[in-house]
Image (cartoon, rainbow, N blue to C red; front, side):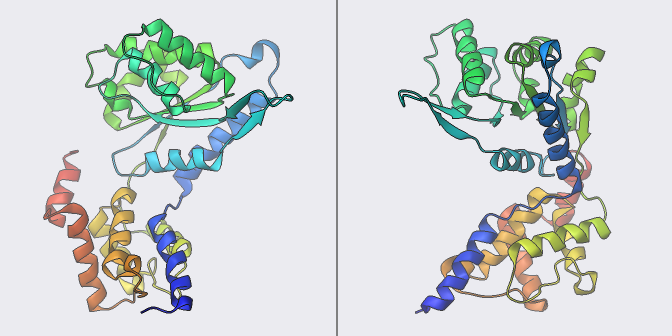
Length: 313
């Protein structure tokens, strides 16, 4: 039986572990650019109000693009506006994140926008025009400033031509007069290069993995330890503990692999079961990290994982 004081210690720690999500300079650059765009838009008048700026966020799978964009939505939550006579409520959503539909179709694109704004999908028998009108109405009614379209790669595997898909996305930006963020892997970048006008429309911010176990990687790990706030120092970012080197080898510098490995490590140590244990650097903790790696990646060896990453799988 664990006493109340220990439970109070465990619960916040378990919450911090389960919700581990730290930023680093490249991610913060994306946020700063979007903040700048939105701030400038508030001062625009007349014809300058139209023709919004947009960006694309490109990078390999696992670098943290989606988590960063979801976090930006979380940091910019809206509110519910109630009319003076209290007869109408509207959920104001300045930033909306959504994944493109898979399989991608133009109608499903509009339906997905409505769904992201909190409205159920319309019956499939409706026309593209009906789905489009509802999506545009909701974007205006809910005062959306930034619409994030993730998983741009789905267009590449669809039966819709790349040109038609990108024209539909362009129409959303123009008709709704909002800022778009297009996110995808380097393979999806070809969609931005269909023509020069398109490429200029979505200037690229590239997020790459941490290729080396260097100072930047150690600073990321230090931020993670600060976010975890353990009772005793772990030394996640201290090269003297060898933890930065071990974690870089296991994750190949991918935030999307690093984070679940750390979460699984704490899970193995029993934190989520109510058993309060701290990670200390010793031979036993390295074995726990190895177990966590295999729980996340299956029986894939670190060498196989690195080889697949190098081949672009």
